[in-house]
Image (cartoon, rainbow, N blue to C red; front, side, top):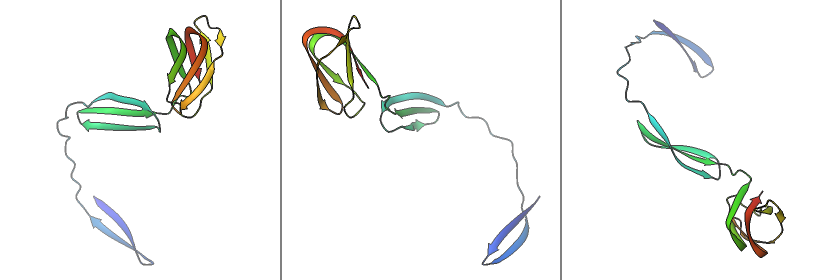
Length: 129
């Protein structure tokens, strides 16, 4: 087999012809199949990483925040503490267990926690967007 190689030297183009031997062999014995399992899945700046060494590896994912968080308050309470991963100060909508909209006093403790206080205790859901 002849391989033609073109190299540029300064402003002159030089073409050299070389003969190389390319050896082709049969593939070796296949190794064990890779096992890829899902490790951690968190929210934040999207990324993926694979840890471990073949054939046992772990895929770790960081997914973007969904833009919505649903809090379920199973035990009736006058104060609901809601932890979320939305960041910032999301809008809060509350419904009781009968799906009636309820208004409360919203206090943003941090960019990942909201407390909603009500005049009477009840259970239901809070929707953060």
